[in-house]
Length: 65
Image 1 (cartoon, rainbow, N blue to C red):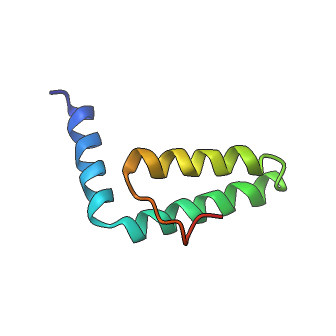
Image 2 (image 1 turned 180 degrees about the horizontal axis):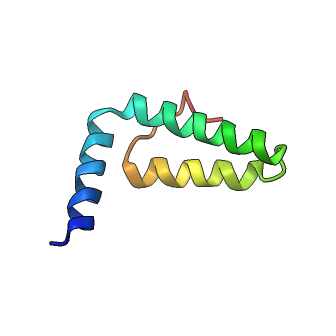
């Protein structure tokens, strides 16, 4: 297994152990991106947040925009 595979696995494990922090980080990143783009790409940014939540296994319906 390569170095990047190990880092990816470690990141996924940490995300599963701390879903609240992952959701908060994704929300902040999405808000930042929306602010910088003037909400022009809000739908795409939200889809990206949802994809990341699904991929990391940190679904929290209460925190999604």
